[in-house]
Length: 417
Ligand SMILES: Cc1cc2nc3c(=O)[nH]c(=O)nc-3n(C[C@H](O)[C@H](O)[C@H](O)COP(=O)(O)OP(=O)(O)OC[C@H]3O[C@@H](n4cnc5c(N)ncnc54)[C@H](O)[C@@H]3O)c2cc1C
Image 1 (cartoon, rainbow, N blue to C red):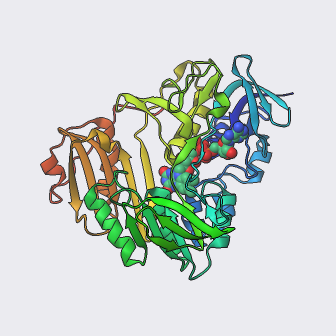
Image 2 (image 1 turned 90 degrees about the vertical axis):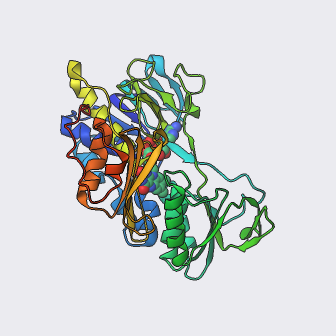
Image 3 (image 1 turned 180 degrees about the vertical axis):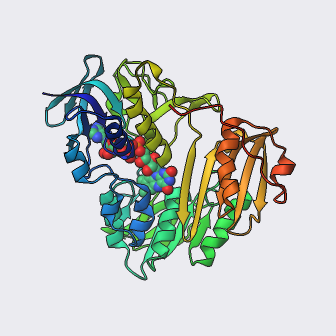
């Protein structure tokens, strides 16, 4: 039986950044353990659909910290170790190989796994997904110049994989049931129209409003059949059709689970000493005053770092308060997004939404709820997070008029713990 003062269950983005912060806070040798089902030390997943998939960045560069970091700081990393049972009240985890781990404080950061296609033929060879380094390497191996790839799904992973494979001279067709690419994520129809034409101009076929009926092939996929009857040639398929939370392990445990593991403003679950962070945590968002679960890199990073600080904060602890944020890169475009566009009832643009340089601002009355910024002056980027966080009032007319400078944001009323 191994005992650690702090255990992080899951070796993904949350774990990698939490470990960094633990070291900054002065964790003692042997106090921190990371238990991960993967055979890689914690790594960033975003490059797997971008630079690494394009062949521009070596996969090793995705590691959040190198092996030496964990060795030097005596952080016990148990890789290829899947936890199969938990007894949270008795602070014990049991691995598939029968080894028990006990803890004083546990951070559950088991993240998510890809949702599998259910269509007939989904089990054929060449039907691929993207979550891990192994998945990435399978796609890289399949991506030969001139081959036909069908990407199923029109959201972030689908769009990024489509763009990266096109940059490898693969002929890409995207299929998705929505009317528009990245519909509502947070793209407005105007924004989707821009991205769709940008993708088409770079040779990507876009089959919007289409559902997959089946996949055909002799052992390996060769054709994707759509419900409309159309058939698409496919040397391989990549499906980006969402994720499933890795909360199954906790079914029957005392944890409250409802679209994620419920935590309080300190990321603590209903079991004292047991916390959750990253994709699986549903926490009270103090800025928007509603429960929130975020499946993005920044949230995993920030919550991992927050937990490490919390473990050393004692009575001075502060709640987790953070403006939700994510980013994406496709071709030569990079965009960032803050806030919650679903809370807005008006949207205004700065710049030209039919060009690669614009920002979109969602307001409810005179309060900014969300902002999307792509290739804009720094002032817009700087204002986005601060305006959302401070709740400072601004009219839609002023915000949508590029000639009017953005107000200097008031000092934030929130601090991140
Ligand atoms: C290809 C790709 C590109 C992305 N790009 C972006 C982007 O551009 N921008 C953005 O904002 N977000 C992006 N994301 C999302 C972001 O990476 C995730 O939100 C983030 O990884 C979540 O971190 P996490 O620590 O919660 O979970 P994960 O990083 O998924 O880590 C979970 C870990 O838990 C382990 N685990 C699960 N169950 C067990 C168990 N029973 N025992 C032991 N270990 C277990 C898993 O093996 C894994 O190591 C991307 C994701 C992917 C897959």
